[in-house]
Length: 510
Image (cartoon, rainbow, N blue to C red):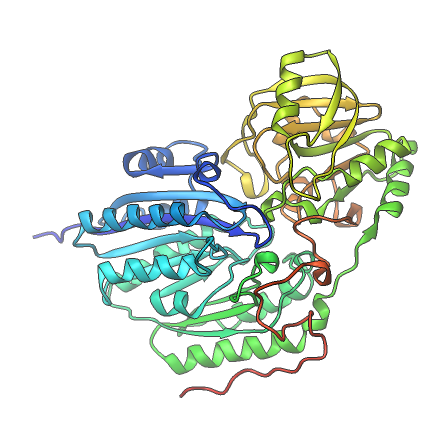
């Protein structure tokens, strides 16, 4: 008699919580992804799904296996403030109900971000894992994937059998890590009982020091991957989300062995010790707004020079920023910069005004009239409405490749020599289609300004090489100069806030 298909439940909870941003209501998730049951299954079956890529990767990794997926809930809001407690409680309750209704189960896969907080709970990911474990029992495989910027807790590692983080930043391996989770699930269904080790470091690396194409983070990830062998299943070096402002802040190392807990611990300790020793390499340098403005003026005047990309790293919607601070826009406009495109400015009232006026109309563009966040200062200028759209796109490069993205009603405004894409849903400008669908020829742009910390690098690297990228020092909710962040909850001492502190890997419990 053939064996019955293995019944595996699938769920996702994706939120990166900025500890200084406004709380995230359910509408934040609904604008990105809130899909349950059959709706989730249908989304993952179509081209350009909205559900997180880890789920797609897990399905791909399980292809050909005798299994039955049980689709529970995918709730994803990208990045915002702490989730409203009632919303998180609803997410957990829906997943718990789905699990109970589906029992008995042979496994659970959770696609997690790992850096969420709630308005009352500092460790929602740990709570969710624990609640799932309480239902399925200690022997049912529970495997999760994490963002590279997860703030990992002991409870998360203790409650799951395997946690696997991304290895790339920008994150272009999300689906591949879902495949890894599927491979681990297959192994556990075949009898594997993995052992995990966890080391938490008192270290918050500035966000702009975390790129993985080269530099310190690339080196430490490569070192960890070099330890993977026939016994070490996975080594995840997790940078953490710097402005999460939570007791879970800090880099983490999770090493998972197939059988030998001692090997897992040795691997985790080795990576952590090396990481601490190289911490000074994570220091950063930004470009002043004055110097950036001069560079943009020069790029506009000399069409033979390399075009430049200016990253507004302190107002990154992908890290909870509002995506609408005016500091660079105001400076470039007052200086008379030519050939610049700003992508993308989050301002629903301004987008609505442009749509009401119509293409070709001249309006007095008033930015941030409905904002209350202090960094989102007002700015106004005469503007021509050049293009309008519904903001529905499918990404073609980087983190959004092949994924459906909603920008809401969108407008392209011309302010003298500057064009600004204004959107109605807060998104990180990491995808060329966000501008191209408005008729922008990115190869003719002299200065591109993006509100993004680093994911833009995978979206625009075919036009703007590393040497053409300028990270601008302006204020915002996602500040990378960590001494400027109004910390409340991070554990102290912690590097680099306490630069003279000492630390060593804690002694083994074994």
